[in-house]
Amino acid sequence: MEVRRLELFYLRMKLRDEFRTSFGSVQERPVVLVRVEERGGEEGWGELVADDGPWYSYETYDTSSTIIRNFIAPIVLQRELQDVYDFHAAVSRIRGYPMAKAAVEEALLDLYGRLEGKSIADIVGGVRKEIVSGVSIGIKRSIDQLVSEVETRLEEGYRRIKIKIEPGHDVEPVKAIRDRFGDIPLQVDANGAYTLRDMQVLRKLDNYGLLMIEQPLAWDDLVEHSILSRKLTTPICLDESIKTLGDLLVAYKLGSCEIVNVKPARVGGILGAKEILETAARLGIGAWIGGMLETGVGRAFLVALASHPAVNYPNDISASDRYWEEDIVEPPWKLTSNGTLEVPRQKGIGVEVRTDLTEKYLVEKWTATK
Ligand code: OSB
Ligand code: MG
Image (tube, rainbow, N blue to C red; front, top):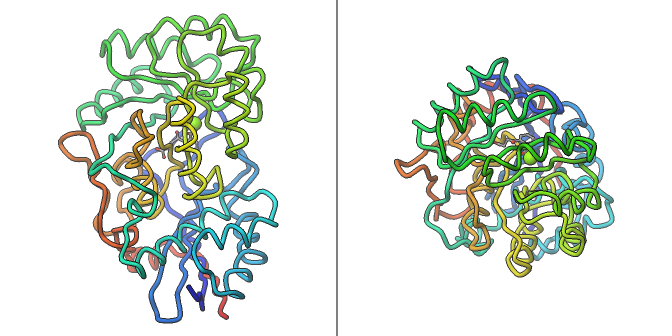
């Protein structure tokens, strides 16, 4: 693959509704798309998922796109890459910045798939025709509002509900949902908002038959999660704390989690995510694919990964219309009557980027050429 042009499209897009977690609220987000073009004119697209501020991780769209512009783009344009593993070897000297690496890796994988006539699902060893779609619901102004959103999502067909929690908004919303909807597949995500001093509340949550509690304790902690895991019967799922395959191995040795939320952007790309999925399966750790409020471009990679056989829980991969009035891909991602998304088998990501919409939402464009 000889990449002759790498472009960044900086867009700004409004979410249909505010999305609030324990670390902050998003109404409108930066969307940075990576486009690579190969000598013969074929293209590939990827998405940088970093947000405005360093809240979920240290990356922001600004710092990570600077890393792409100054360090990753020159590497991609300077050499002829044999394959995408070659890309990872070349960028391994850049420490950290998994979201920046994942964004460019996605674009290269899409390009590689288009050149070789393979879908992303083919490339990652996906086997499913459709993937189970769950939905992640933010913190609402009232319990009534939350219950009514859960009702809407269940009616739309989502197969699992995840709600965001934080101290002061935890047992009460879970109880309200159980009282109203009974034994639906339900889980919570704290985004690191609790400590071991909150045992009382965590013990109460343990009584609601939750599928899992996601990232209850600090984002960078494995030891305290292993202590907590011994005290609860509900499985612990780690998101923020698993940044590398090495983290997963340590978490396994310590007994810090029973389940892992796999996000390609958090672990430096699709190939790294595939490796984590395979290791999780080998170790008997449950796995599913998480999201970062992606547009239809990033979503395509999540769907492909979720078709991997190691995935054994519903995913945080909703349809395009859960976040976007108009998604920037054609066709948009649509929920089937089964509460699933179909896995495309066309070459590359299997959806087309709508250049009329990338134009409409464009704030800035950056181009580097060979
Ligand atoms: O912790 O899983 C998370 C969104 C942004 C940042 C972190 C998280 C989330 C979600 C939404 O839960 C997942 C999605 O629907 O894309
Ligand atoms: Mg999470």
